Amino acid sequence: METPRTRRRSPSPRRKKPQDCEWILTVADAHLAAATATQMAEVAMRLAKRAQIGEDDALEVVRAAARARQAAEQCEVAADEEEARAAMRLSLAALESAKEADQRLNADIAESLTEAEREKTARGA
Image (cartoon, rainbow, N blue to C red; front, side, top):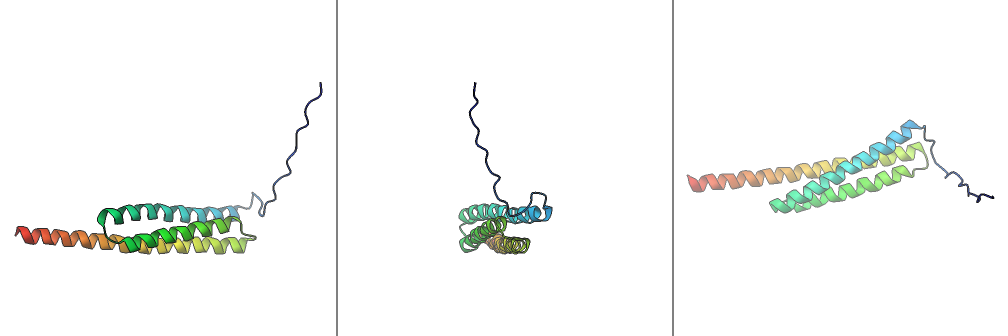
């Protein structure tokens, strides 16, 4: 009995070797920054919507998260290590932008809550 011929797949071309730990860590760092910024964006949008304040800062967090994701994707397909590191740095910079916008949002919400408490105390006194 004749067995059917199996088709061998040629290995997919890789830009980097799997054992290149530095490149793997560079890509992982870029994706971690993107995932962190994305999580921050989700929380920022919920907070801004609930507090009805700081929508512009929340949108900045969302835009920064999108930049971080795009940079992480560029890091993955980089032609060489230097290009990968540059994309990873862009991803980290976008995360920093997201953090700054998130801090402004949190400060706006805290100020709003403090003002509301002052008004409540003033009416009760």
